[in-house]
Length: 140
Image (cartoon, rainbow, N blue to C red):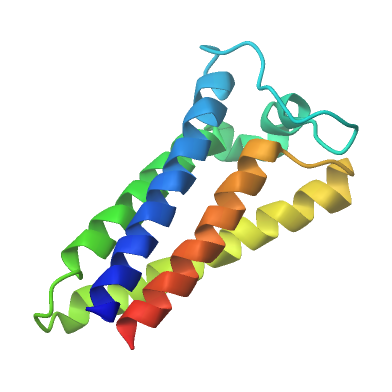
């Protein structure tokens, strides 16, 4: 039962990461004109998500993130059962490593390059950390 609850928590965290990325993608595609941030000078989501760094190969990274975390969600759901699925489980482990790496790299880049944070991206990074934590606990 504990394995299932950890997997469910990982799925919930993945859903939270997706929810944080939706406004970013809407802003990057011009549907939203402004991303609200918490008060203070620490956050500047509009500047960060509108930068060239946030558009690798000319594609908004919010859209790439939605596709990426959608894939992670599918893998989490597919590996949820007790059936042995070694290929899917290996794929999930690799995907979680990629997700964690990208989230941490993007967070560091924001601090180093912009000296600010995107609050929505920070939410995605925190949700990713939770997702990886619970998915690893569920795999034990």
